[in-house]
Image (cartoon, rainbow, N blue to C red; front, side, top):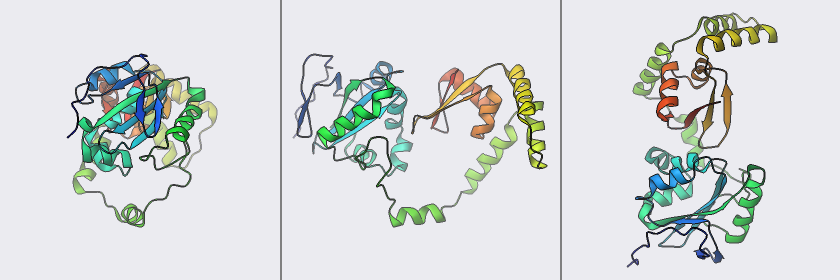
Length: 259
């Protein structure tokens, strides 16, 4: 039987966490994941660093890093993402539950040394849940034959098709955007000057520049206005506006913020 978990956090106390076969002093340890969800998200907003999940039953661990840890942790608290991913750590959390894991923030750092520091901990701890041994790389990863077959044969359900069609119908396009789409369909190639003018017109009408972050990769793209972001993501401008105000994720993947 497991010992009762200690619910307190360790902030630079010199506490040495047992991670793999190594003794590491984390910046902070979260031992009660379910109750500390809000604390985890709030504490790590906008912070860059390396983290470690450790299974308290079998001692297996996973090392990860992110430019924005809060955004990355949103993924771990998404049941949809956990159920639809093939990553070993996600499967482990689904199988054992959050109550049988602890989360360590191993180090906060600057983005320019993030992968270097992640690699340091991967080499030191040798985490069993990491499918890849090179930080930030997919080299050596191969999908299983069954997975590749699913990719080739997967079909979109009628419900999904209906939702996509509705999203397309509900899109609110500016005159500039409509003109750009119309010209693209006729095969006309726009000059850089014309593109700039169209973007300026759209920007003047909407007036809000936004950043779209893919929380699964950490990649961020900037758009001059809500309409261009909506076009890129295939959703309505209203959906982008609501996500910006409420902080909701678009398609459970994209985080919208102001530039």
